[in-house]
Length: 146
Picture 1 (cartoon, one colour):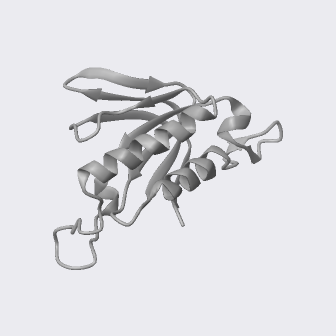
Picture 2 (spheres, one colour; picture 1 turned 135 degrees about the vertical axis):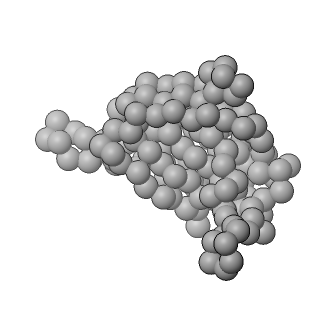
């Protein structure tokens, strides 16, 4: 699994101009699932992201996690994160999971976060979505499962 993790002041996702998920301060996660991924990958990645110390403490050092701050999370599925652009001019998506597996592991990731008591919002799997955010920092990281 591959995630683009963005620390945000706020973020929202809309489908057909209707906002279906929004958060305040926290993390926007763009999540891609590879065809070789398993539930273990989703659990590892959820734990890793929840405990990343990327929020500032009282000394302005990135030393606090989402769990420490009580922040929120917006998770948006994005298979294009698995696009391979090394050959030609069109990305290849041969490494991306098929929709059934991708949705199952996406939902498993969301459930792992929810179990930790984080207020979580989501996009709509396989929909064309408009994602808005106010990036905080900016702080943007790419995190991958084992």
